Image (cartoon, rainbow, N blue to C red; front, side, top):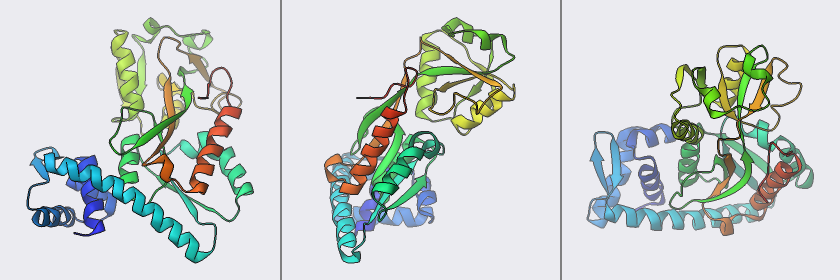
Length: 305
């Protein structure tokens, strides 16, 4: 049994797919399978059940996953601190994010942190969804993940930082652009630009649509929130999106963002394996982002206190 075996096994349990982990690690599915089989041979029992749509851990697998995830978090912290001690420099902070996170939530914080801690390296790894950020925390030597706050995830602690109200992004020439607010019924019968599939934000939005009895008509789906507002600005449809800091103002002269008060706000913030296990610099960076989100908010962008 090796540390790599355990890392891969934890990643497989989280992803529910051998092939997804193989893509993440840039190796073959057979290589991923061999890690799991080696653990099963040594322990003497099956750890995962294979199904047509992926794999799920057995009872024994769930026990090992929980213990391994906790152990890996502590070991990673120790190895990081030892490396910093040996190198004699300030070390690094490793963050995994979605494609738009740094621009919308962290740009000012990065400048502040670098001014305060010029000896510390900031390393960013881009993921496509909160789910993939959770998986990356388990597989890689990462400190922090910026995610859309969702249901509890075993072995992951989530901490909300900012609440994002929903708005309708609409071209300035559209009749809805003159409204001071959008009611649920206004969203029926218009063509929607859909948010990324399998994202937490889309799941929350679809739930709000369903609760309001809205049938969504759409022939367009995008990979990220920025693309949704770009298409709305081009007049190719209407986009219901979280009101991200920086969208209002002169950057989008042909676009209007109209609040939708009936939809519950979307929370964004940090995810880590263990807050108490963060290095001092990782905690300092997380706090700097939180402070900047609070300073940069207005009534439309409430920060968590």
